[in-house]
Length: 189
Image 1 (tube, helix red, strand yellow):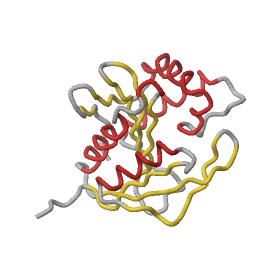
Image 2 (image 1 turned 60 degrees about the horizontal axis):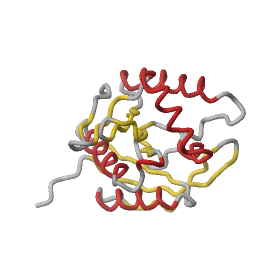
Image 3 (image 1 turned 180 degrees about the horizontal axis):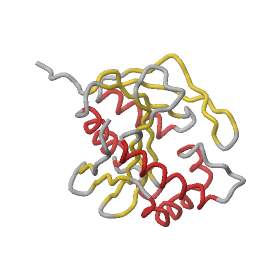
């Protein structure tokens, strides 16, 4: 386990370790997503005030990232907050070491930001030694499914037959799962 570090994806796209300094920007971005935010952050309690929940989340992920237990980055596109991407250990992993999750705010979608962020994170985690990553997506999230399928194809993964049950805003939702089984990728020769 190693501490989280910033990741430069390209000249316009940077991943910065998430923490409390992003609270205001994140709340503003969440407001743009409406109820879709519960898909990206299924741990949110819809009947409780959102800002304290998000503040607790940011405090936790900063601490976990420093300790190498979980990695959450703010996605910054041309210096603006565009979303979040994360690698977590979760109790519902089927075959992977990490769960990859991503959320791009509405105004930044359809620009390849999620795909480039995923590639940056997978390159980064693969440099830490042999590992595997699962991606779980609600099948009703068509854009999320397409992004996951594209990433899995680029990284030589495959879908799993199993599905996982995720509690989203108090309701159980089955998610499709893909596995990228071996990072770092071996050189093709």
